[in-house]
Length: 303
Ligand code: CP
Ligand code: NVA
Image 1 (cartoon, rainbow, N blue to C red):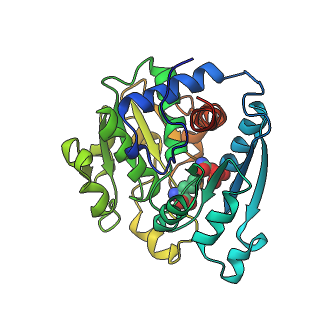
Image 2 (image 1 turned 30 degrees about the horizontal axis):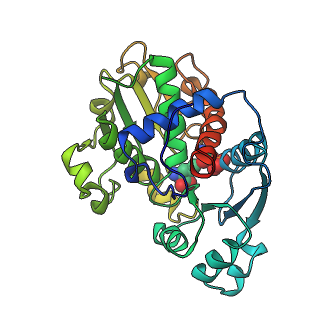
C-alpha cells in the first residue's frame, strides 16, 4: 500500500495537500477498491450534516464499515447545535467520543472553526466553498478512463462555487489544465484565486461555455442552484445558455467524458441525452466516492 503522511490530519480542501499526497490518495483508493478488513476496528466515525446527502453520507458510512469502523449520523436538529451550542464546544465534546468527524455545512469558516477546536481529523463532506472528496472521486474517474492525468484538459461549465473552487485547488496542486465558464457575476471567489498556489497555476476563466469546452478531454458541470441558495429564478435566468447539451459536447474532444457530481437537474445544467449518453461517466464517478472515502478514512486514521 502507498505510504501516506496524513495520519491525524483534517481534509478541508485538496489545496491543503501536496500533489504527492493527492496522487497517493488516488492510488490508495484503487488499492482498497473491493477490499474489506478491520483496520479501523473499534473506531467510530461521526457524520455531522447540516444539509441533505445521498452519495456522501452513504459512501462514507459504507467505507467505514468496509474498514471495520462504525458510524453515527447526526443532522443539525438532532444535536444541541440546533439550540445554540457553539461549534467549538460541539467539536471539543465529539472529539472525546469519536475518532474522526465528517462534516457537511454551509459556511466554510464553520468547518475551519470545528477543525480548529477538534482533536480528531475533520473531513469536509461539502461546504459552500469546497468539496474535496467529490473532486478526489472525479480525479480517480478521469485517471482510470484516460489512463493518466498528465496533459488532460478539463472544462467546467456552471456556477463558480464549491465544485469549481475545489477543482481550481486540485488543478493548481496537480498542474492540470482547467478552463471554466461561469456567467458574469457567478465566478469563483477572489480569495480562492488569490491563494499563492492558485496564482502560480491559475485556471482560465471565461464566460463562454463553447470556448471552455473546445477540445476538452473532460466536461464537468454542477447544479445551478446549490443547497441553501435562494433567488433560484434569477439564477436560472443568468445561467441560460450554460446547459451542457449534445451541441456543447460536440465541441469537446471526440473521446471526451462528461462528469457531474450529482444530483442532476435534468433539463437545467445538463440534458437527459448527455447525462444518459455514451460520454457520461457519472455513475462510475458516483461509485468512486466509496473507494475514495475508504482511502481518506484509512489515510487519516490508519496509514
Ligand atoms: N455529490 C454529492 O455530494 O452528492 P450528495 O449531496 O448526495 O452527497
Ligand atoms: N453545488 C452543489 C453540490 C452538491 C453536491 C451544492 O452545493 O448543492
